[in-house]
Length: 281
Image (cartoon, rainbow, N blue to C red; front, top):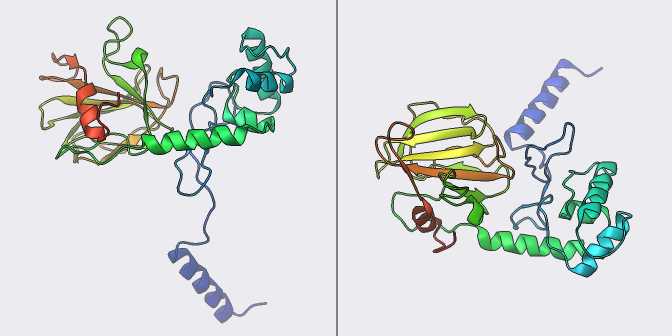
């Protein structure tokens, strides 16, 4: 039986190891909300340590020949078209393999099928993410709200879309990517709503407008009344509320503010300037 002195020496060694950071843990993880109970979380992958993570469950574009290869693995007629029968067969295959059930071809499914072209598609996705990472804002006193790789949501997710019901701009990014304050200001609201999910409203900004950050993955740690600066962490990209993908919905509201008599306006020009990428939206 070890002596008291030996036990103390062992404990002291463990404390030194923990203080130094402990053994390195390989890999990083992030997750997105999934539609089915017990379904695996959205996976993020990176082909090397310097590459940005990409979502394994985002739909990928395939050639007709590649679609046929997928259909053969899914035991459905190989006609090269992603019709309803193929989507049903894919869901069945994904369920059997305990994958995220999207009914669409994605990197996770292609890897499970052990298809040779999966590696090339992953490399293209990583390269696309590299080019999408924001440059530092060229506008003094402002920061781009997503600190990581992102892409525009498309015409259907811009300001005024859906017959004017869409009052902001959607920016796609991997769930878990940091979301930061675009400028200085004061936290006005930090709550959750069925459509907006977890969201934060920042007021007292340099422009006098309210900034709104919606669909955050988890409730922000900021308290109402807290002061923020450009780059202060608001939260992280999520898929809460009625979001159908991992994204940030960003709004700008004029005085007297968000749902206090103010009106929303298109934040596209500001986002483009803050991104440091020019006309990227």
